[in-house]
Image 1 (cartoon, rainbow, N blue to C red):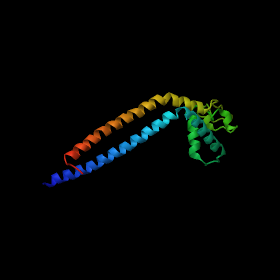
Image 2: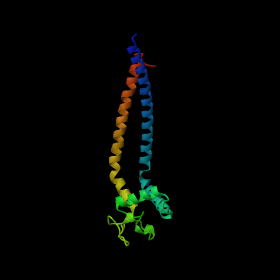
Image 3: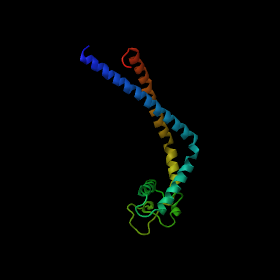
Image 4: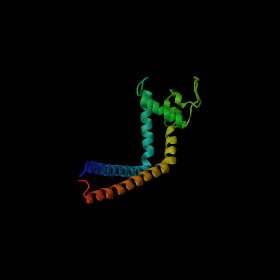
Length: 168
């Protein structure tokens, strides 16, 4: 046998190794996605309460934090308030008089007595989630179909190589 044929067979064996690992990892990924989809559909009605609990917890940490503490949480909470044009969890009263600049209706906001958004963020987040629910589900189903097609091609390809004695 020529060295080119030997090298070709060696690369094929390596390719079969990668094909096998690809199949195993894709199977694991699909299993995790299916489990998450089941959990998501079972707890769909309770998502609103999770939003509210998490936002209230984040708001309390934000209010109790000093300058420079929990900066990531503060930045994220400010981003939600700014993007969704809301203030607090249930409304501006959640801040107890110490309203952050991210609640201001003006852009840029540089006045001492700032006008603030009155609506809370929990309702806005729940509405956003409800509007995007179907498109998210369609994306997940599309990814599942693509992954399933890849698995459907991988297994026969692996078997074909194994039957012809090319590999393990």
